[in-house]
Image 1 (cartoon, rainbow, N blue to C red):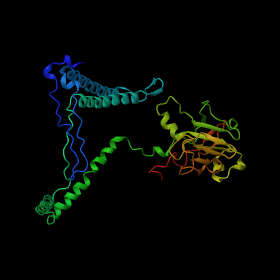
Image 2 (cartoon, rainbow, N blue to C red; image 1 turned 90 degrees about the horizontal axis):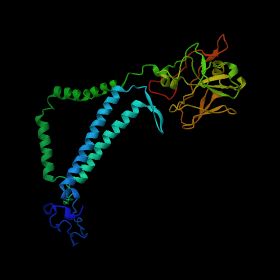
Image 3 (cartoon, one colour; image 1 turned 30 degrees about the horizontal axis):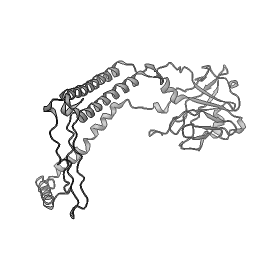
Image 4 (cartoon, rainbow, N blue to C red; image 1 turned 60 degrees about the vertical axis):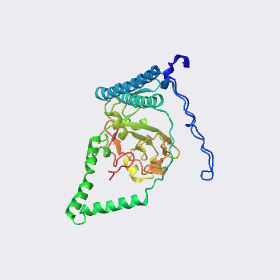
Length: 352
C-alpha cells in the first residue's frame, strides 16, 4: 500500500527528532548515549482498515481457542479410553490421547498466537527510555519500615497472648494438609497390586509367539523364550497392565551350570523362569548370551547372570530379577507353582 492510498489525516506527523537524539560523552558520563532509532509507524497505525483486519485475526484466533477447549472437554467425556485410531505415519495410537493433545495444543497455541499478533500490530510500539534509579530504599524509609514492624509486633500482643500465638501457628501448619488430601483424587491407591501378578499355582506357561502352552521339550539348551500366564489375551482390556508385571523369560541351562541352589530347586530340568521386566526402570529384557548365560537390558545395559539367580553383574539395576517357581502338570505342560516371591520391576517405596 502506497502513501497515496492513505488519507492525509492518517499520515504520521513530522518525525520527532528528539526520540533518536544522541547525547555526547562528557566527564560525568564517559560513554555516549546513542539514543533510540526513529520510530517507524506500522501500516495499522495509519490505516484503520488494516487495524480492523488485525483485530479480526486476533478475534478469530481466540475463537478457535475457545472451540478447541470445548473440543477438549467433549473428547474427554465421549471418547472411550481403550479406543485406538490409525494416524499416518505414526500408526495405531490412543484416540483419547490424540484428541486431548491436539485440542489442548491448538487452544494454547491460538491464545499465544493471538496475544502476539495483538501486541505486534495493535498495541503501542513506541520505545520509552527512563533513567535508572537506586533499587534499595533510602535510610529514612528503611528506618520507618522497621519502626512500623516493631510497632505492629507490639500491638499484636503475640508475646503475651500465647494461646492465640500457638493456635495460629497450629492452624497455619495444618492448613496445607487440605491440599495433600486433594491428591487422593489423582487415582485409587495401588494397594498390593504392585506386589502380585496373574501367576498362581497351576497357571500354564503360554508361549508369547504361538499362544500355545509350553512343554519342556519346546525349550532347548541355550534358547530364550518369552511366556505369559494362561488366560491372558492381547484383546483383554487390562492386557498391557497385567503383562507389564507378568511377562516371563524362560531359559534352559544345563543343571550342572546353575550356580544358585535355590534357582536350581525352582527350575525344571534346567529350565529357569525369570521376570522379563528389568529392575532398573522397567524395560523389557530381550538380549541373551548363551555362552555366559547373561541377559542384557537394551535400555541402560544392566546385565544379569541367569545361572546365578539373575544377580546384577553390571549396570544401574538395583537387585536381581525375581524368579518364578515352575514345574510340570500331569499332561506334561509347564506350569507355575505360585507367584513371584517379590515385586517385579523397579524398586518402589512400598517394597518390603
